[in-house]
Image (cartoon, rainbow, N blue to C red; front, side, top):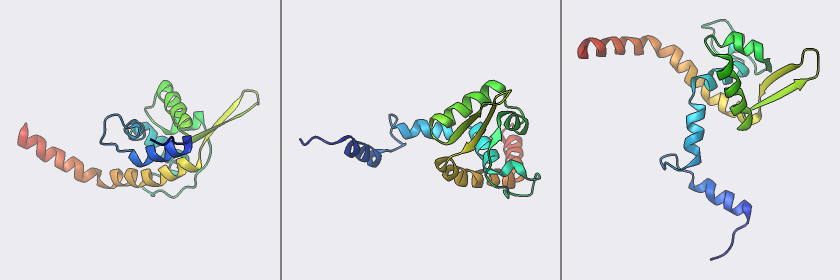
Length: 147
């Protein structure tokens, strides 16, 4: 059996990623990025938060301060926002910039990797917004039939 370099081992592992296999690391990544707060943070940093509701995804990606994100993401706790931003930074999806001012200014923005995920996620967010009435109607029909 021939030995492989680290680069060859990484390439081999990449070919073998299969989210249907319980031990596959891509399953943990799918779990993380399917979180509602991740979707909303990506949308906010991607520019969706800069428009009027119902106007579509027309904003440009931009850096935002923690307090801006907290105001925009109604219902997110400080702990959840902090944890989610840290995990996105760890995964290379968000870059955190600290400016030594008084008080310290911290901003977050999407990385290239984060922008590529945002492009996919914005379609999911738009779909959910566009089809909510249909889903609510189906839920009501189901609930009357089974209730």
